[in-house]
Every structure is written in C-alpha cells, then in structure tokens.
Image (cartoon, rainbow, N blue to C red):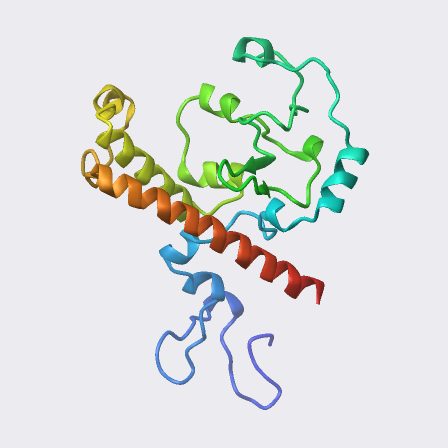
Length: 222
C-alpha cells in the first residue's frame, strides 16, 4: 500500500528508486560534487583571510598612540631554540620571527595578521619551529597552519627550492625531499638576474597585497 499513490499510479519503494542520470529528468548533482580539484586546492580551511596593516600609511599620531598604549618594556625573552623548546604553548612571544600569529615585511615593515579573528591563546599552532621539528607534513596542513591555500604553499615551496638550487645548496637537501609517484620534481633553473627580478616581483606583490587587502577591508566596513 505504501508503494502506491491514491490516484492509482504505482511508485517504487524508496530503497528501489534509481536516480536518473540522463535526459530531462536527470537530477542535478550537488555543488560539492562539481568542485574541481583545482578549486579544492585554492580553498582555504578558514573563511577569514589574513589582514595586513600598512605602517607606511599610518600617521605619526597613530604611531605615537601605539607607543603610549603598548610601551616597549625590557623583559626576558628566549634568544635561542633551546630556551623556548620547553616554553609555554601557545607561545606568547609574538615578536619572534618564527611565530605564526604575525608576519612582518622586512622591506616595508607591514604587519600581516595571519589570524585576525583569533587571539594568540586561541591558536592551535604558534611556532614554526615546533612544526618543523615534527618532520614533513602535507601542503594542506601547512596551508591551514599559515592560513593560506594549498596552491599558494606549493608556489612558495617551488620558488624556495629553485632559489636553493641556484645557490648550489640544494644537493645537500635533496636527500630530505621525498620522491613522488613520478620521481623527484624538476625545479626551474634560476640565474642571478632571475633572482634579482624575483625580488622586484616580490616587492610589487607585497604592494599589491596591501592595496587589495585595504580595499577588501573598506568594502567590509561599508
């Protein structure tokens, strides 16, 4: 009785129904099924993007207010890996260059907040050296730790390895690079001129990133 309608037309039980895959009655697949591999690689684990604070665009008054609110005091800080190895976690020393909470541009001094919606004590990982001591990890995990996409991490990795190859330091590190299904990856060969051009491109990308980030923040504020 359950398999028949009141108008007399018979229908199959739910467990025997087969989804149409062709024709006008074909059901549209879910959005999750239509996501390509490249789209998955370009996705972040978190919806909140990093935020960049441009020091160049801050007024002298704003800088002075910052110094008054957060004066630089002389207190103990670990100066070597041995001193911080058994230190508290999450690590409270945000000014350390290995801390994952912020990144500071050596050229412009711009401060990038990798997790602007979190406090330091809410982070799962705060020290890049802790992650490195555990050995190699996947691009997805590194992207989640740094709040970047998998594709961006891959680009940074390839570029860094290419620079090491150009500096003739790569041979000593080759033994630590795992071989993939098709063997070791072929890295681009960079000359000294390429390295100089790459540094210029990095500077331009930093400026573009800051401008795009400021534009997005203005859109959110609006």
